Image: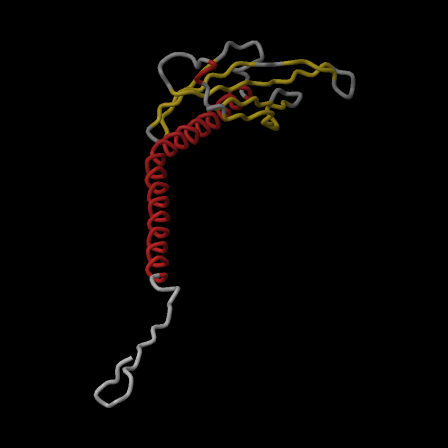
Length: 173
């Protein structure tokens, strides 16, 4: 070694070996990529949800409209049975109404049965099946039915309806 101007050997610079050098940059890049992936996934979810919203709202409105028109038809048939204008031997009927900007048709048909009551008397079960569909000007086809309900109208000895029982209520579409 050579001596410097002061007569001492030159000082060596010691470098610390830093094995973690650049690790912060890799962590930062990983963090940015992770946040980007999460953001992309969430934006995809929000976009698909917004696209499906309109369809789901239309289906919901159609089901609610069908429910409402079936309930109105039940009230109408109950009144006809109570005043004697509807019997088990009646022909099927229908009604139509528009609810939620959806035209709905409800067809009903008697489904009466007889059974022996507690006193041994034959009792007529005045059941009616209601089928609701989008009103296309024709009776509801089975494949087009949105709501189907079977309702029992309990009558007293004078023929007046004293109770109404919903035996089945199915949302089919």
